[in-house]
Image 1 (cartoon, rainbow, N blue to C red):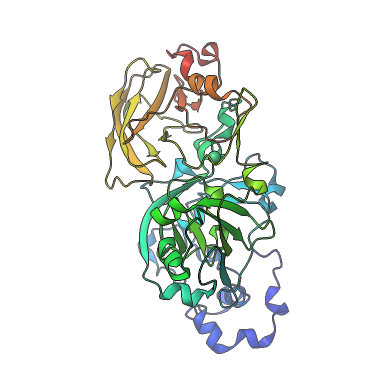
Image 2: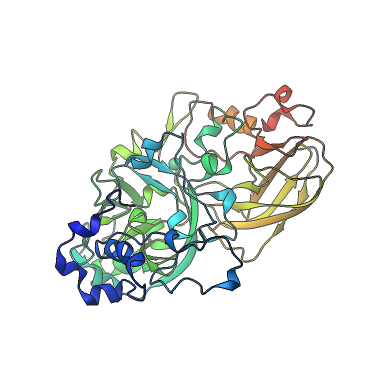
Length: 449
Ligand code: CO
């Protein structure tokens, strides 16, 4: 929030009109709420009103806090996105990544303010009334769409995950033992997206024969650009402007982004301002210098779009402490960019034996799926892990198998099985990249480390 406590004094008087105060939650009484209302007037999101948290007392002994125009989390809930590394300055970074707190969330929908961020030039703040999407190139009727024009088309709504192709990149060199599910795998999130199918827009502009690719360009300062094949655009892509029932958050592409279900996040251009149809790919920096996959033989794979099947146990995972031996329910998430997760197996003995976990409903294609697995922990050191399979028949590989094919120079598309070490004192750490000797007496095959 603002670090200027006297922000109210800096506001033009007209912005504190009576109507504005009412819109901003004028039911707040007296001076307590004044600073808060002023901040809303200044277009700053309302903070959690911690000043309204009563001193410790039975909650039924006093009137509760008043209604608020925008909801807030309990002051006792401290879930946050996180940056890699713990430099506090990094909270002001505009270039880099910010990870979804996978180990703190439940269900399959990621609350929009916990959706991961991967921005190349910060988050642009765009006035939707001024925003336009230009569609040109190999089309019969080049057009410029306002947001109002886009919203007049019949819309579609669906739950889909978005994962950065660099998610879990620390798995190639091997993470530190204290690396959490969030900091290793948190560049994936699921939202309910709503918008207009790209196939509708393509019909409207009359995409010509031979126009097998399109360039999408974002309105951010990096002018993020990627090429997308026509077949994907005609299949299940959309220009999305709704996220979890409200306008897309600015850091997810407000007012409109490209959604390519199951494909790497980078290609799903945010803040879309231009779409150009052409006969081939456009060979932008982001698909030549970046987002191509360096193989051990010196060649590079390009246009590797689909995110492979993957899963991780989120509880218990690194940073957690199991209070005692006995019954505990293991749970986690699985997903596949190729289709639908058909099964998740869990091993609680380092990969010696595997049993099917229960997939919790709903099980949707190209969306996070939640699984659970009952476990009676005997108090001995254990390596636990999950292995997901999708409806193409493909299962997550052990890490050593993946490294053998891709080498350690690789960066993108890491989807190996994630092992967690549960120590005899209940502390949980990341077993990936450790040596078998590091893992005390826990039984585990080296293939998984
Ligand atoms: Co790729």
